[in-house]
Length: 124
Image (cartoon, rainbow, N blue to C red; front, side, top):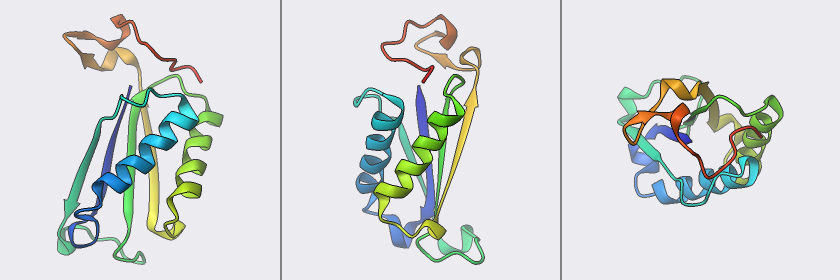
């Protein structure tokens, strides 16, 4: 499981959510073997006054990937590198944060996630 939150300025990124979502999903599929149809992305687009980030341009994005614990450090590095390589965005304008928590901390389809039978590998 991976859920993604993307923060950015509304006046820059509104209408471009699909572009960013497609980019992130393709990287999750490639780097972590996530199923293509497991896409859980949320966009939190803010007014300029609500997104204070000195020394960054108006195109600044924060990408948070919330996932089950189990991905190796190399897999996390691979995802980060792939997002930067595929995005074409200025690296100064993109920050990525991977937050991994144990499956037991997630409730999905009525049960703790450690009781789910997943169709994909988490240990990559």
